[in-house]
Length: 166
Image 1 (tube, rainbow, N blue to C red):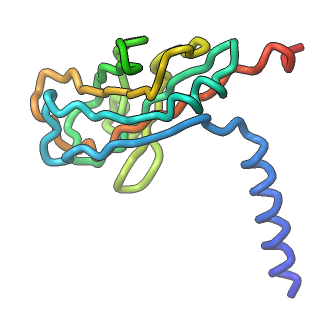
Image 2: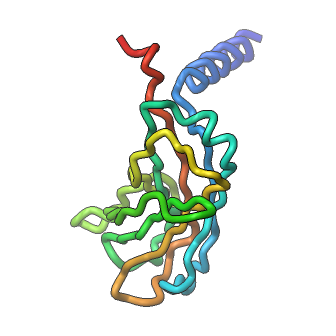
C-alpha cells in the first residue's frame, strides 16, 4: 500500500513538472525512407495557419527541427535546408547543421536504437501570412541518397509575451 502511494505521488509530481515546461505551440513530423533518403525527396510538414497566427507572440519564437536516426547513418553530421512557407511565398529559409555523433563515434542524440536530435532552425516573427504554413526539409549531403535517417520533425515555440517579461 505504501509503495503505491509513493508511485502516485511521484507520478503527480512528474506530471506537474512536465506541465510547467513551455510546451511546443505546434509540431509535426514526416517519415523518410531510412534505406534511401534522396535529396529530391523533400519532407513537407503542414502547420495550421490560423492557429499559428493567433498563438505566436509579438516577440516571435523559434522553429525547432529534429532528426530521428539509427546507427546505420554513417556520418558524424547532417546538414538540412529548412524552409517555412505560406501559400504565397517562402517566409524564411536557413541551413541547419546537426552533429549526430561525437569525434569518438558516440551518439549525441537521445534514445536507444533510434536517436533523436533537435536544433533551432528559424527565428519566428509574429506571423501575419495567410497560412496554412508548410515546413520543407531537404538534406544537403554530398552523398545522395543518405541511409539511416527515419524521420524529420519540427515544432514551434513562442517567446514570452511582452507583458510577462520583467
